[in-house]
Structures are given as C-alpha cells and as structure tokens.
Length: 362
Image 1 (cartoon, rainbow, N blue to C red):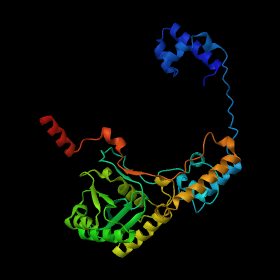
Image 2: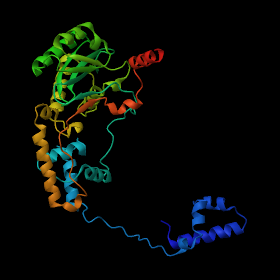
Image 3: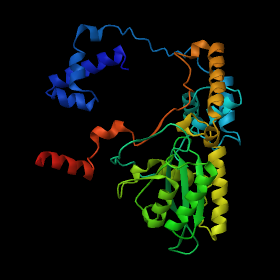
Image 4: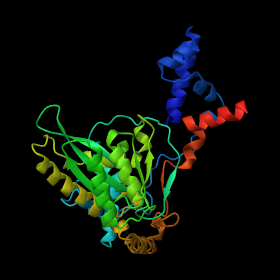
C-alpha cells in the first residue's frame, strides 16, 4: 500500500518530468505506475489522509502456539510423517482426538515448508466417458484391469490382475501371473464370485478392451456365472477410471520398490502386503476416509456416526472456530462409473450416430 507521503512525492516527480518534456505514460512506466493510477490520484479523495489502518490483527479463534506445536508434533511423528492431512485427520478422529481441520494442518505445514509433491506426474487429459453405471451396494459393480510389473530381465514383465468393488473400493481379488491370459482371468473371476457369494445377474464387470478382457474364455465364463460385461471404448483409459486410479495409488506409494522383481514369488509377496494395506489401513477419500474393508463389511455407518460425534463435541467446546455445521460424515450411498452429468458434452457413440442417421433417412 502506498502511503500518502509517497503518493505526493510520486505526483510531484511526475509533474516535474512532464514539465521538462517527458511523456506522462513513459514517466509512469519508469516509476512502476500505470497511467490509470496517476489519473486516479488527481482526485481530491486520493490526496486526502488514508483512513485504512496498517495494523494486522490475528483472529480471536486462531490456533494457539501450543495447538500449533501439537499439530506439528503429530505430522512429524513416526506414525504420521508419511501421510497427508487428509489421511491424518480422520485417523485422529477415530482415536477420539481433534486437533484441527485438514486446512489448518495444510496451512501450518505450508508455513513450515513440510509440503511437496512426491513425484512428477503427467497432467490429466480430458476424455469422453461412456454411459453411467451406478452401484448402491457391494458386489454390484466390479472394475478390473491388468498392469505391468518390471522384472530383472529387460523386456519381460509380470502381470498384476486386480478386481475392485466400486461401491466399497475393496480389492476383492488379485493375482500376479507371468503372462496376460483370458483363461487365467476367468479362473480368478470364478474364485471371486465363489468367495463373495455372487448370484447370477448380480454383478456388472467393467474393463477396458484388452485381449484378456474380451477373450472367448473370459466371455464364456462371465456368461456362465451370470456376470454382465461392460467395456471402455478403445484407447480411452479414463473410461475405466477406478482401476486406473487404483494402480496410481498403489504405484505411487513410498513402499513401491525401485528395483525390478527378481521372481514372481517376490512380486506376489509385495502385492499381498500392498493389498492388505489398501483394504485394511488406507482411508479412502471417496468413501469418507474409512477403509475399503470396513465399508465392505458394513461397518462404515457406525464408524462415521462416532466420528461425527467427535466433531460435534469439538464444535461445542470451541464454537467460535466453526462458521457453520460440522463436516459431513454421512456414508456415501451411490457410486457412479462415468456419471450422466458429463453426458451433454460427451461425444456420441457409434451406435447413437447410426440411430440418428436412421432417423434422418426415414
């Protein structure tokens, strides 16, 4: 903010420069001002004493030094040092503790330079989405895909098969093989349906257009099990976003090995620990930060209700820190695969184009 004394000095210098023959706009540029600012300063109000105060006051409900130290102690502790605030705060709430909101954690960590990106990532690309599929309970919509795992032999890979329940985000089945094969995938889905008690006509299985997904053995197995197949469009990975997001979560973890896997047994041991962490420890952001296993077992309702009570108690103790209601901890009731909200801007499918053409012709 320019003080009145500085403003009067600048005005005097500009008048002196123009009287000496300088162009006003050039003189303003030299002083770092815009011509519009100088014109505004010519009004009587601009040269009147500034009524604004330079004093800066802290909010009355700001965190105290002790509270800030407690938050820093938590985020730097061995238990939470590897987790972001979005994972820390719900876990503290599960322990019956409330130190502050995620934004408060981020603000304090930013001030202490404790934030930073883990790895470089390619910017997200816009893709068109297919028709929506809605899941309102577990074992209703599955998504699956295969990802490569490097081996010590250049050009050879192990293949991680992962099946995800969209409603609960639980990994319901996985396996690592030395090849991509429709037969192996069909054996895995048979095992999943048996363990989960899936009835014919109960599950829709979404995947991309890879060979194992559309192989004759896999399609025949799905028909036998009464599982409805659903496919992305070719070369559009975002048509299967849940599996893609899952692979990113798993591969960007600090525990992901830097070196390639020497044997398939080593890869399976790593995957077993990874799936156990994801299902039983990881608080998923899209299901109110409960674990997929808790949601799959139907325990999320009671857990979120207790978490809401913790927040209500925190607001009752410090009402000045809450401008409205507490955080929404109600369970997620519906999960959509490529929701219809995006359909108005989506590119018409080939089937839709054929239908439109038939209407025009007839």
